Image 1 (cartoon, helix red, strand yellow):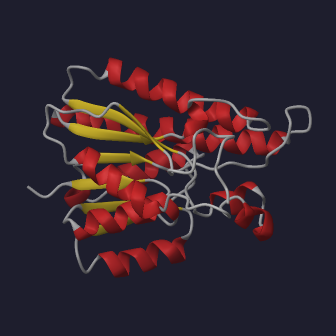
Image 2: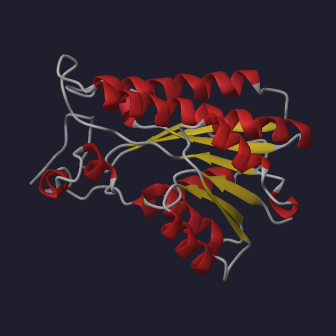
Image 3: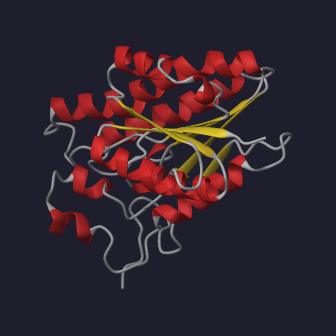
Length: 250
């Protein structure tokens, strides 16, 4: 039976690579994001391989999330896999110099957005007595680094939510797990540094970072394990990275 995956933050980085990897392997897709042009391009590209439905909404808006999910056509009404991927870092400042707007954005997207989508889809999974939720966390959810304060807090929250979900959904037939990447070369740093491309590029210089495709491959591995196997929590870093602050750059 062909499965359907619901991916948030699907227009770039890990979300986009996961969508491509799933499509190649015959998994139908519901792709979510805010950039309509990118959603349209993905639908045209991946629609040649599988069925694709796109949803344009702001994950921070709980009413928009509910409306979007309620609008799913019948052929996409059963969601087998939820990839809670949407998330961003905004700024890299000390707690005393941090921007309230940046804090709001990180907590609203990384924590509340994940909760809004999960809240809308979990009842459907409970009703069908099956499903698989993958929460994309970060090594920032396992440790705290200088100037990471609120971003780290948001990813620690994802870690706690992932554990809480797995406990609360035990016995429902739904598997829950997290994939926590270290340094992955995506648009992440461009967003964090608000378009300062030189600063963003320096993050990934001097070593080989992970690529979005690496994480997509791992996510596919996780969701294709036999039903009795649940990979509950997985941390992955590039070989050059030992922690958030220890990276071997030559």
